[in-house]
Length: 184
Image (cartoon, rainbow, N blue to C red; front, side, top):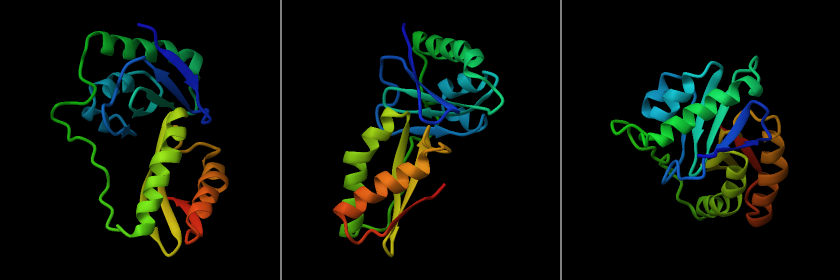
């Protein structure tokens, strides 16, 4: 099995592409070892010294490292953990774990629907290329609240992505949008 790796705009994260499906639907973000019980693959990755977060996407795994660690030392055991897990055909998500559920949005206004569509069609695929995800949380009084996940969470360029990219795009298509803010 050959697993490709890609650097992301966030120097603390790296994207691992095993050439097969990881999550059939949705994504799963695990930010500490305690939460890793939801995913046997994430548990294996958190056993690697320095792993601080795991994000499971459709066909990739993004790993976040602790600031004092370096990728040269971490990549081999991460690659081994992913390869062994997938080669043994172990489950990605625990059978006992609840499937990730999209947050219920009370706002089903026409503007919120338009925002969701733009995010899903134009933004999420581009963000997935960088090893992350972005989800619509809320729209209130001209402000769009978005949640960045995976390599996008904590990325030095996330503010620029939100303001210069996503905010400008939403303002272009939906004049009622005044601002975009990150929720976490």
